[in-house]
Length: 107
Image (cartoon, rainbow, N blue to C red; front, top):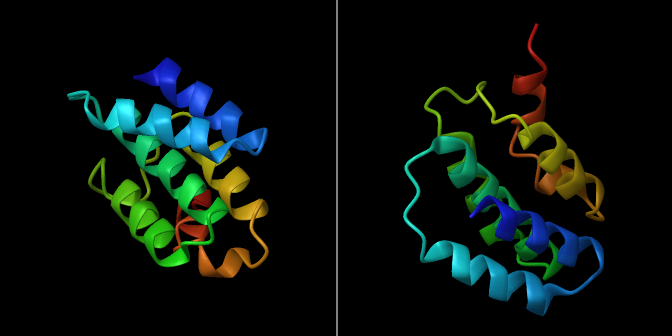
């Protein structure tokens, strides 16, 4: 799953949403027990949704990703980078940050 997610993220940086969607659909059919790839899937999906200006769904995906590990302050290794990319690429990042970035920054 993880390599497909990386390819989907590359497609998103290249403004190829159809390719990203296809890869994410393949990922959605995979059973994965580890929390980190599930979180990365949800954030990559949120990125696609934000690119398609479906901000409500993007926010739902971000919220789901925030709770994958349980406590909202525990991200996967690459999660902060994905969140920054997702939020910085959007015209109004305040609509997508889900108040999660400040929580991950810690005290």
